[in-house]
Amino acid sequence: AQKVTQAQTEISVVEKEDVTLDCVYETRDTTYYLFWYKQPPSGELVFLIRRNSFDEQNEISGRYSWNFQKSTSSFNFTITASQVVDSAVYFCALSAPGQAGTALIFGKGTTLSVSS
Amino acid sequence: KAGVTQTPRYLIKTRGQQVTLSCSPISGHRSVSWYQQTPGQGLQFLFEYFSETQRNKGNFPGRFSGRQFSNSRSEMNVSTLELGDSALYLCASSLVVPGKGGEQFFGPGTRLTVL
Image (cartoon, rainbow over all chains, first blue to last red; front, side, top):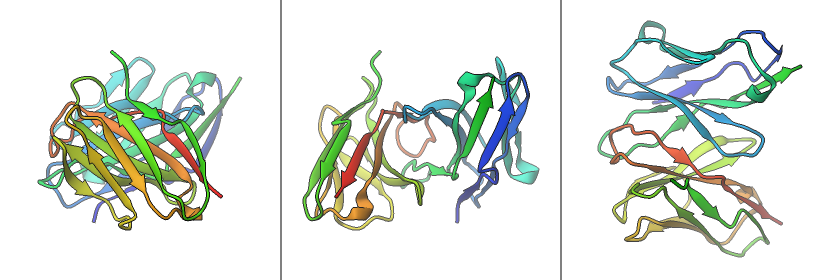
């Protein structure tokens, strides 16, 4: 069975604080893909990053960074120097595609509130 | 390049009615997937289409159906609506063929309310 767990339901921080959103996944497949999406109040899911299971290199994009560790089945997301515009629901997702397709399995999401 | 578009954006129906939602993928994208988002169940996969063929289906009753046209546009239909079908329905498109873990880009969604 495939599963994504985002244990943090809500996080509140003050601007300029660093914040890490946790994501733990379960899959028996050796080839899989991990994603992070952002859902602002407008409702549209915004793609942030995709990693495949063979690439454990951490990635940094501006204030965003991702830490992928297969040993702990985790794919954590850190926002450095948070801003009010970062307030949103963040989803971690897993895709273990085979012949059947590419369905994304989402975690329940973490609501991040950044206050000024 | 225009993003994924979904119509209508909002819809109010009554129990027992049926509804059709439409999705136009990003130009050049041939894979289209549908997801249902509710406060209780979160984001759940409905189905995926590629080249007018359903490639994958989530765990939803047969009242939920879909199709894809030759121009990659997709529709989903829900018949005999129930109160529990009230949700945000999200469509996503991908440039990558199914099975390759491609990025999926989402539309703004259709918010369906069943009274």
